[in-house]
Length: 209
Ligand code: SF4
Image (cartoon, rainbow, N blue to C red; front, side):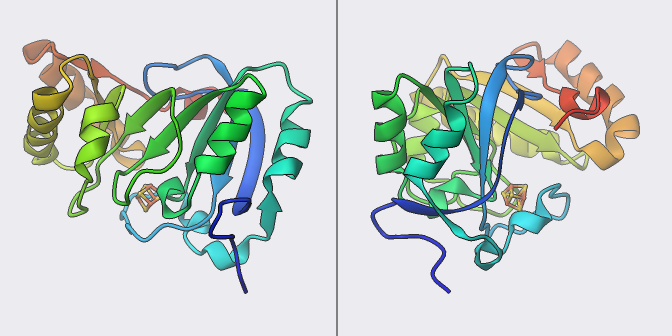
């Protein structure tokens, strides 16, 4: 079954919803979320495993997305997944901008970029290659801490991004299932390395999507 079109007019949308951004620099702000199916990264801690197989989601047209989106008052649209960069999002971003929306992207950086983005949250994953253009264009680098040695990986990623993009915000976030043991370590680390900022999955604490 075809789940997308090469021109990006049809996308395998898993879900769309209006909520508050739970993580990162825009925490607490209203946005319309579009979760696109398909991901080949395979993180052990992934909280969106149901999104991995794009064949499970019917191709959805940009017209349909815009029609539903216009019911809500927000001017911000967040593309998440899965891994949205598996698809050509040039047309989607152009249509969203033409309609007056800001475009935000959540990505692992593991595929070449498409689309014109007002904000990119780059969240590199262990063992996954990151395309260099994401380091240049990210507004925020968000590293998920699962194990103690992830602090080393976070610094390696920060060095790469800061070399080409000195204004990029640096965020550390404890992996949700281990948050009780890891959050104190993340807090202590930031106290000693204040170039980093704490990110938490606030939507899960207040039981919203
Ligand atoms: S990149 Fe994101 S969606 Fe893909 S497996 Fe990792 S956490 Fe899940």
